[in-house]
Image (cartoon, rainbow, N blue to C red; front, top):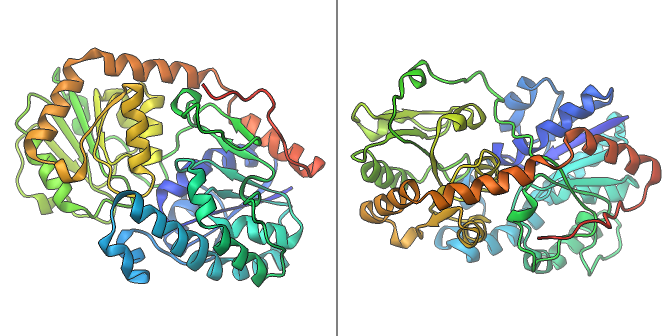
Length: 398
């Protein structure tokens, strides 16, 4: 079979899809990706054909150029605007026609999308194909209701009937690699949700562990990252680096492939600033992860059993931070309360209080008991054959 994967620009949306794509290829299926041009190198570096499709909004700066109103918003208000104006409007307006054109000659049998890429399910329904979503951001039902009208406009553009109950995004299959215990039991996920053992992937380039990681010594290792979307927040980086470099820790900072580590000036010997290090290789060396609350980062940290300090900035990060705090796996420092003192106190407390690490390790153990990514391919194959929603009757959030 031919599987067409599609994701919006940003490694945080692409990387969660790669394990399923690799497993499908191993099972003998033909797999290709349709994404913004900035993802060409990591897609082709992972061995898949790449088709440029849609807008290429690789970061917050690009998004604010497209929708200037985003510039004055933060937190949940920013997320609502982003979903309405970008996820459900600008991006599918561009990508749906291009996906339909691609399908006219590449002829996919089904479409797999990251769960913010609505163009994938709209194009699939216009083509009469079944489709699946991969869980890449926090599931927030209120946002789906917020964009229902915009999605119906996109459906109407290609001759589809309205979908007032917003059933389309998860109509057939929703694959989640988030630890079940992480999700709020009060928030019912779609009935088509199936859980998988996390298969973190982040090695879409040539980077590996730097040689200096072999000599980190006995001090606690603190890893600082703002992911790949909000990593231009250099003032946040600078505050956190100043706060943590004088602690008795080894501080490892990754600023992103598109940032210059030298911009933060000379650092003491216990501070190591790099563009990019695959987290899956680095996490076994770490004790605490300081981050922005992005879904990919927190999922990888929890899978590794690592506690966190979270400074949420936008998108799903506030909801992720709230949930991590409720589960006792992280301390949260709001962006408006961020200072050298608040950051230093939060990291100190997570290092000293072993309860944070114990809670994270409990979630990690539960995650490792789930079916592996081969099960995802079995579900996709079954979906193609049965062409009906794959309801998971055994799912009980807890």
